[in-house]
Structures are given as structure tokens and as C-alpha cells.
Image 1 (cartoon, rainbow, N blue to C red):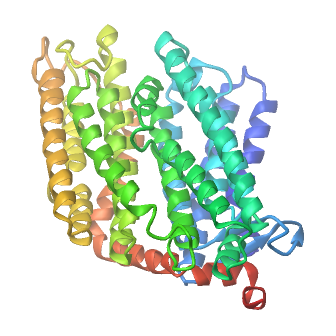
Image 2 (image 1 turned 180 degrees about the vertical axis):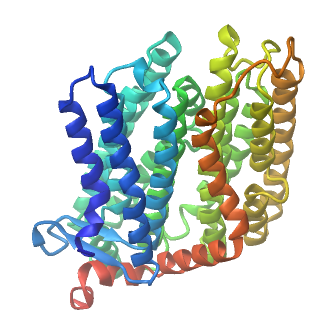
Length: 497
């Protein structure tokens, strides 16, 4: 059973999505129940996979029992298990929030939600570059429709930009795959690295061009500057549960770079060694500063939150380029914090918008709000700014310790100060200037439950900060040792040939 467990994060949302499509649209309760059961079942599955991967063993699942590099393989190491866990623990509260009524604003929300999870989980598990492209397309096609869920001029405009840019990225992805196959004769990630180490490249120049195209594509998916202009508009236009789920989407692009870094860029035999890091380092710092300024200029709460997602992209890309075990461990911890806290803020913005009428999430004084919403806003603001004693503070402290470069300290701390000003302005405008009795409105606990679940995860990062950071260090060490990955996928005999 343990060996087949690896494919369940793909099969569960696949069959759930297909089943939901067959169910009658009039039976909304049945579609919700099917989606909720599938999403909830993902949690114990990924936790079992995490327990399996925590031993340090890299598990390989050969579809059709075809031996790599010719067959399709799924690979479960600690990084893949971590990303699956982050996604499943994010998806459940987001889905609960959507079932409050956001799912009724358009057709096929529940099936699209499952197909989105299918693409994300598949991207984390695949050991093949072509199937990485396939899963990217699955999650992107689902995200196109989810972004448009609920209709509206803003969503249509943002959706067109999002679709055009990602279709362009997909075309470049295919070109990159063709060139990397021409250079190495394979698309299996481990086998590509093996060919590079053995010096059997058809043309190092082809590999450099293909790697540059792949980095361009992944940077577009991650929204790295100057390819980041689409993100604030798209995320702020989406409905609250969709935007919250999209909090993991940029991390898929970062994951792809993280996965390929030790395999393609991080060893002496690579013709790309030393060529990539300086450029990505500069772009990461520029993205971080640009996103902080964008948050300060935001005129809507959803846009402010979207810019904060971009802040996390810049921070994480910076630690990827440093490429040390300590930096990557800090980055993994910060990834957990930034994903869950940004998703929680998106859900909170959705609750605020639904209670302010025509003002929605605009940064303008207006209708009063329940005190609970104000308290949660302050809590999330402090968390995302990075003030003690919350997970944001611990995450940024780890980043500063891992990356001693003065310019990184200046940009990270400077961006935190700018975000502090942005939150202060937003909070004082929306919550402080009230017009009626603030205790008049009732706040059902069921409305707050999904948000509280996400907050509980961030508080767990505080309580178990030591063990969590230790686990992140183990992930970084395993990822750094690309030979372990290659031998697990290809076998020691094939590697030595």
C-alpha cells in the first residue's frame, strides 16, 4: 500500500473532479460533499507521505513499471512531501470558505478546484520535465476558469492578461524542452543531470539556451520582476477563495527552480554554473522592493494582499540563488509562513468585502465592521510585516541569519518598513473611521472557521519553530545532494554507466 500511496494526491482530485462533473448541478450539496471529502482525504494522505519521506528515503513510483529514463516516474522526496503538505493544508480551509456561498457565483467551481489541485500535486511529484509541462498546463487551464469565476469586467480584463502571458510561457516551455532533449537526449530530470555530469552533451550551448528558456518560464510562473506585472491585477480580481488558493501558485514556479537548481545549475560539470545566480539575485531584490512599494500604493485590500504575495516571491528567490543549506532551510520555513498567512488575509478580505456593500475592499472609510475582523486584520498584519513573536518574525530572522549580505538586509528590512506603513494606512482607513455602532453586526463562527484554521497553522510554526526549522534543514540537505536523487531514480548501476 505504501508504494501506491504516492499517486493518491493525483488520483484523488482527478476522480473527484470527474465525479463532480457528472453530478447534477441542482444538487449543490452533493457537489460540495464530494469536493469536501476529496479535499479532506488529501490531508491524511500527504501527512503519511511526509512521514514516509522524513526517513530520508527517496521513493520512486514507476507508472506502467517502465524503467526510467524511458518511463514516467513520480518521485517523493522531502521537498515534494513538504509542498504536498502545504497545498493540502491550504486547500481544506479555502474550500470550506468557498462553500459559504462563493462557489455559487459561477459554474463548475468544485470540479475546477479539484483539477487545480491535480495540476499542483502532479507538478510537485513528477520526475520528468515533459510531465512537469503537462501538469503546469492542467493547473493553468483550471486557474484560467477559476480566475473568471463570478464574472465581472475586472476579472475579464485580468483573465485576458493572465491567459495571454501564460500561453506565451507555455510555448517557451515547449521550445525549452525541445532544446534540452536535443542537447541531452532525455527529459527525465535525474537523467539530464547524469548526462551533464558525464559530459555527454550534444551541445553545451543548446543546454544553456534551453535552461535560460526554462528559467524564463518558471520566473513568469513565480512572477519574478520584470515578469510580475500580471500578478497583482489577477490575484486582486479573483474571488477570495480562488485568490487564497492561488497563494500556492507562485510557489510552483519557485519549486521548479528549486528542484532543478542542484540538478542543472549547482555542480561543477554544469555549463550553467555561475552564470545564473547573479542575475536572479539582482532580480529577486528588485522584486522584493518593487512589491513593497506596490503594497504601499494599493487602493484595495485585495491588491495589498496580492503585492504581499510578490514580496514573498522576491524573498524566496533571493535565498534560492544563495544556494546554501542554511539559506534554503530558512526559505522553506518562510514559504510555509508566507503561503498560509497570505491565504488567510485573502479570506479575511473576502469577509470584509461582503460586509461593506458597494465599498467592498476599497481603502475608504465607510460601513462599520465587527471587532473580530479588526483584530484578525491586526494579527495578520503583524504576522506579514514580520514583527515578534509571530512566524513572520521568525522566518525573516532566519533569512537574515542565512544571507549575511548587507544589501539583502537593507532591502528586506526596508521593504518590511514600507509594508508596515501600508498596513497602518489600510487599517486606520477601513477599521478606525467608523460610522455606526460597531457591535451591531453579528459574526457567525462558521464564517471565521476557515481563517482560524490557517492561523492555527501559522501559530504551530511559532510553537514548533525549532523542530520545524530542523526539518527544513533536513529537506535542504537532501535537496543539495543531487546524487541521492539521481541514484534513487536511475539506480546506482545506471548512474555509473
